[in-house]
Amino acid sequence: MLLHVEAVFYFFRHWESGESTIEKRGDDLKRDIKQILHSVMLENKLSKEEIIFLLSDGFSDKRELLTAADRVRKQFMGNAVHLRGIIEFSNYCERNCRYCGLRAANRQLKRYRIEEDEIISTASESVALGYRTVVLQSGEDSFYEADKIAFIVKRLKALPGLAVTLSCGERSAEEYRLWRKAGADRYLLKHETADPALYKQLHPDMTFDNRRRCLYRLREADFQVGSGCMVGLPGQTLEALADDLLLLKELDVEMAGIGPFIPHPRTPLGSAPAGTVEMTLKMLALARLLLPQAHLPATTALGTIDPSAHRKALQAGGNVVMPVITPQRYRNLYEIYPHSTTCQDDNPDYGRRCMGKVIASLGRTVAEGPGHSPKPPFGRMRVVRVKMEG
Ligand code: SF4
Image (cartoon, rainbow, N blue to C red; front, side, top):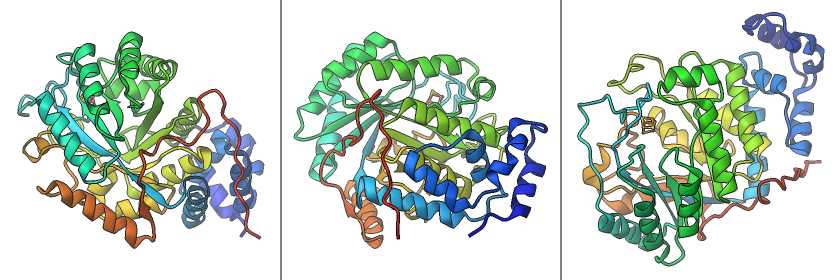
């Protein structure tokens, strides 16, 4: 199928930066789209220009991209879908991210911290339900000194066969090392946006440089590292989205969480439009092509804007779902963005069963092991080739 010349002209007319290397390379992009996809499947690489083109309205054959990503997922990650149960153990946060309902300035939010024993009993229940990973997530809450988290991690690791992911924000290299030594397997720290100016606008008391530094600290501490971004942020360009994907590639992440921006009514961005499912799926598919062996969740944020989005994401390169297993009485208080109701219910078994049905309806299975990353360690990245049809 030939890439339509009109589509290329549309792309260049609508690309905001005017005269650029991209225009000069326009002829290169007037290629058969199959050739671009063929080449990324052989080399796991795309240029920034190619990514921008594939994200643009000018590229209309979205299905081809999603199908390619699904094929790559199947070859490298198989048909099993990993469940990661999220325990949101504290909604205190000292930051003021302009999109987040947990921001310190949101004084209307009732704050909570879950007692340590309740965290352990929740995790223990989740093991009985078949979860093999728990994700301990909180706002940036310095009440939890490093030793306190390390102690909780040690208790969790005493549960049979349980992998532990931490998601507690930016900390020092020593703290990350301590938590890794305590047994935490993975750390999730989304970079949110790789555009430093936009990052600064959204995070008034933080910098992109420090975010990146923390991600490299996690690398040095030998975690399986998860990062990721929001799609559809106010002021976000296609160029910035391409940089998000290239940063995930540079970090060679073990996990990439890519979800739409969703406005929270009690934040400064409360009236901004949400990101779209379509753009989020394209980003997810491109992440799969660039990082064939990374875990890619169908994010809860996607489920918030479209109840069928989990299915769509699992068919666009996704291989992980992350049901919230926070005890019910805290759940409505952990509101970074308004909640999804997909597969959420008072009964802790419900999310597991409901997701199991979604997964089975796609002819896939729920993974039985902890779902550690299958890719080579950081720094030993190697190109993996997709088997081509015919
Ligand atoms: S995004 Fe994270 S760091 Fe920022 S306000 Fe929300 S919980 Fe805090």
